[in-house]
Length: 475
Image (cartoon, rainbow, N blue to C red):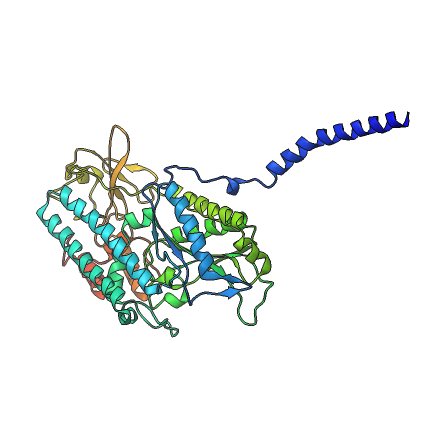
């Protein structure tokens, strides 16, 4: 009887164990599985986008603590990110591909050469589509100027002493240095929508506390550059992609901290070299603190590296998902005019008080043309006035696909009401006094009333004389 009881008990225990086993297996399979564990599959979510992946530092630079060497792991993360972004269709440009250190100004010079090449191709495409000799001459002049600027950057690559001339290096801690005129010209070209819409610069780092080391500090931090940053006020304050950079910094902070299991330490403004010396959207991410034991182990763990780089990809996908891609029209005369000046990235020659009907009647195109309000909310029609910052949109009527868009510039109309009046005079005055700034390239261009390349008291004088009836502002 005892043997039978033992046997029965054993069977019950075995059945109980077998009944529990699938639950345990299921629990193990589903434990902590989230979007960051899912592999990045081949897709086209980033087709047409260009991501500069910048593995911070190199041999002899960066931090090291507790067996962790920053520059080594930065490159590991960058290579993982590169492979995954390319799976999503992105073009990835690495600023460092080996352990050897690449000086910051070399990274920036190479970036400018790359972006100017891209812009030259766009301007050449515009030449191929143009039927206006004056427009072709202007576009060719821009290409020649970009070629000259590329030559300067190539000289920087070959002669390190030139870095001190063209970049803020070594860094001026008096904050009095102004941007070099040639670098400023490069920045202005990089305002082009192909850069703003299609490019993102991501600089990858891990963090460390100062001396003496505080090993308790931990968490993810991201940085971007704002035009309000105190240290940049004398250097350059017309960065074109501050809003985009802030969005990228927010998304990167959220996804890196969540995917890596790091504390969400915060997002900050700073003018680090990789954010300051170009004019593309950019974010610098300090994934975690390698001086903190918990963060360090997460950074070194291969499974966590996979999760963190998945998080970076998701952040980049979300960033670009809200931005229309900039595409060049191909093999078509997009739009031409014998009345207005259609340039690579804007349309000018429009007189104040011009209506939508009058503007469209002076344009020729095989495509559907429309004028969209400055805020992008709706189309304008008929007798409505076109104003600075409105956009001429060229689209395919059959597919409703936008082929090109041209911000409208009316010289002197800095208030955006389609006319030139006292409010425009006061607005430029405030700009010159430093009490306000223009929020778009079109507004900045329209304030350069005499087309000198800069906004000065002479532009105020032109508007004053216009209001007195002494001159007409040339469009």
